[in-house]
Length: 135
Ligand SMILES: [Zn+2]
Ligand SMILES: [Zn+2]
Image 1 (spheres, rainbow, N blue to C red):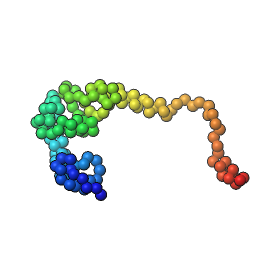
Image 2 (tube, helix red, strand yellow):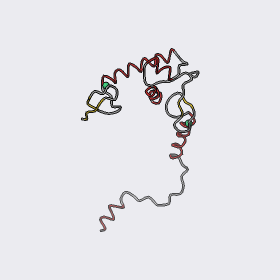
Image 3 (tube, rainbow, N blue to C red):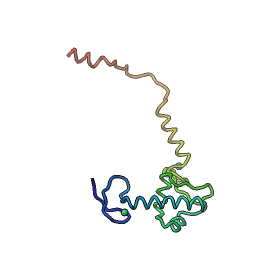
Image 4 (cartoon, rainbow, N blue to C red):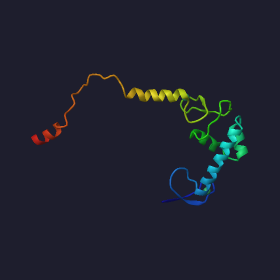
C-alpha cells in the first residue's frame, strides 16, 4: 500500500491505482461529472470555457472526460478536440472516424494476408524429442 497526497485536496490517503485523488474527492468529481453532463445536454452550444465556469470545473478535466468518451457533444456544439493522430476536430474520444477506420484496416492487413509459399517446412511436434533421444 502506498500513501499519497490527494491531488485535489492535499490530504494523505491510501493510493490504489489511477488518478491520485482520495475517495471523497473522487466522489465529488463524479457528482461534478453528472452536473456537467446535465449542463451539456441542456446547453448544446456551450463551449468548454462556459462549462468550466458554469459548473466550476477544470477545463482540463472536461477534456479528459471527452477523451474518455464519457462526454459527448451534439453536432452543432462548438466544442471540438483535435484527433490525436491527424489533428482533425472531433467531439469525443481520441481519434477521428478516418483514423479509426485506418487503424482497423491496418489491423486487418496483418491477419488475412494471401498465403505465400512457406519458406521452411514445418517441423513436426515429434522431431525435437526424437533428436533428444538420438543424442
Ligand atoms: Zn481529496
Ligand atoms: Zn484523425
